[in-house]
Each structure stands twice: as structure tokens, then as C-alpha cells.
Amino acid sequence: MNERSSYDSPQYDVFKTNVKKLTGLDLNSYKNQIHRRVHMLMQRWGIKEYDEYFKTIKDDDGKLREFLDYLTINVSEFFRNPTKWTELQQKIIPDLIQDRGRKQLKIWSAGSATGEEPYS
Image 1 (spheres, rainbow, N blue to C red):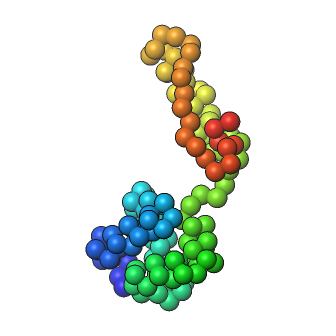
Image 2 (tube, rainbow, N blue to C red):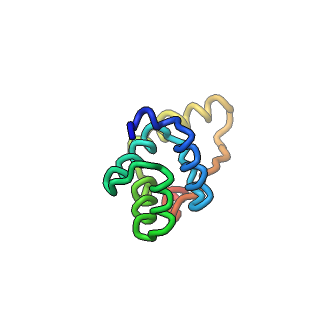
């Protein structure tokens, strides 16, 4: 299987749909990165076809865990990515306050695995 030629293949589309049904994980985000990771895992196990790989992760809990661990972020910590927090503090929030003309902002934070990020 050629990694690049299989990127937009109907077989990969079926694989992504099946993975979403099985795990809830949407593989359509970060397309290049996700596809490379899927392809690397398939190579690791000597699997050449997406349908065969899906059957493998569906039937083998260890390989499913490996698949999920390899494709998802497994880090939760307070103030992760310090440079982003500095940018938020020094540029983004002051700009928002200036643009809105008031010092109160409503902020929504998306969920995370164990909650550290929203509490930061």
C-alpha cells in the first residue's frame, strides 16, 4: 500500500467511519498527521489493508489500546504549553479587553481528559 495514494481512498474513508463507530474518535482532523500515524501502526503489524487493520483493532484489545494511545494526546497537566499561556496573558486578553471596552470576559473551555487544562 502506498501511503500517499491511499490517503483519500474509499477504503480509508470506510476505515475512518468504522473507527468513529467503534471508538467515537474522528480521524478527519489533522488529516496528514493522523494518516501517517495509522500507516505507521499498520506497518508495525505488517498489515497492508485498512479493513484488515480495523478488524485487528476491533478484535484485539491490546492493539486497540495501542491505536488509541498513539493517535490521541495522553497528557493532562496544569498550564500545559507555557508559551501559549504567556501569549494569552500578554497579548490576547489585553486585546480582547481593549476591543470590548470592559474588563470582564466570558470564557468557555472545552473538556479534557482529567480536567487540569480547564482549571488552569
